[in-house]
Amino acid sequence: MKKQVPVFKNNDYNVKIQDLTYQGMGVAKVDDFPIFIENTLPGEEVKVRVTKVQKNFAFGRALEWTETSPDRVPELDKAYTQTGIASLQHLAYPKQLEFKQHQVAEDFSKAKIDVDVLPTIGMEDPTHYRNKAQVPVRSVKGKTETGFYRQHSHDLVPIEDFYIQDPKIDEAIIVARDLLRKYMITPYDELQDKGVMRNIMVRRGYYSHQLMIVFVTRTKKIPMVDEIVKELGEQLPELVSIMQNVNQKKTNVIMGKSTKLLWGKGYIEDQLLGLTFAISPRSFYQVNPQQTEKLYSLAIEKAGLTGQETVIDAYCGIGTISLALAQHAQQVYGVDIVFDAIEDAKINAQKNHITNANFVTAKAEDQMQTWEEAGLKPDVIVVDPPRKGLDESLIEAASHMAPKKIVYVSCNPSTLVRDVQRFMDRGYHISGPVQPVDQFPQTPHVESVTVLEKD
Image (cartoon, rainbow, N blue to C red):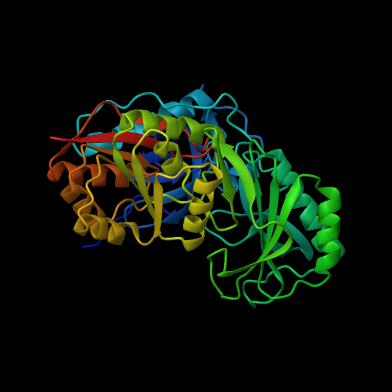
């Protein structure tokens, strides 16, 4: 017999918020049935309208509050919550840091792994920190707009001040948007797969202040491109690079394979931990440079290097952490699947006169097996994987190499805990406390550093 769900779509309920999900949504229960509600906090009493009902849970929208949390701060702009840009903007920053510490601790606790999770390392100013933006260009009510999609939709919400981005990036987006309007460059239409301009990407060096603009287009040519390039240069004195990336596929993936230089040079430079890095359009580079310095310093400190060690950096990107490690190790080997990133890593090694770092383009899990078969014996392996965590075969190869230490930099507590369990099954234990770092203030995301040592 089908279980009766206790709530109905479009009905209103008075509820008390009990907890926050890992996505930062409030959780209320009606007869033990969870309802997830944006922009609500634990302890709040809310009248909620159910907007969607699934078999085991529902989503709702807060209509009015009869009791609000003392941890609530005023929302700056509804658009930040609607689009998920700053979905925790209503939670006081010290409480955001507590929430992130709790998130990591909770995942370890559910897996019955006993570990200390330290308070989250936060920022003095938890706003305007992002050094990169990728914004869609769409027509809204007949006008070319830049902004961000409403969550779970492809409706563009026009936004000019993104709150968590470097203000100079916001300014560059507006200048570019106004030029697209002036020269009547058609925005991309997803439904019809027509139009010229899909996205604008902007990067800015935190220390160098160098600015790059990348136009992501559906077409190979941009009408009036010379005029647009000239005016961008006149209006944005920090600009050093204008690129065009062509993406002709009907896809949600932002960038295509082909990138060409329209003006200036093909990269910007910035500094991190005293080293200089060239950053090209497709390179992965951490978006919060201030916190990245704290995160990487922590990872290097935890690696406990004396200058004698061989270190592997899996998922090395453009070599940011590898080159920082190379200053404290005998030899560093880095691997990444993105060809452009590895080319940048090699250039970056030369730029910084570092000769003891070796970079390879390959899937991390495949290259680890290759190195293992070649008899490479690392003392330390550093992993900084994407959100999906580590591939089983990488854990297998890493364990066979039997390094004394594995330093795991994670951006997803649930895959971190899963991977830690796998390492524990292969003779490793967690050494010392886990340290969360807030790389993404105003959002639910959290980074952390965990050290595993051989039993």
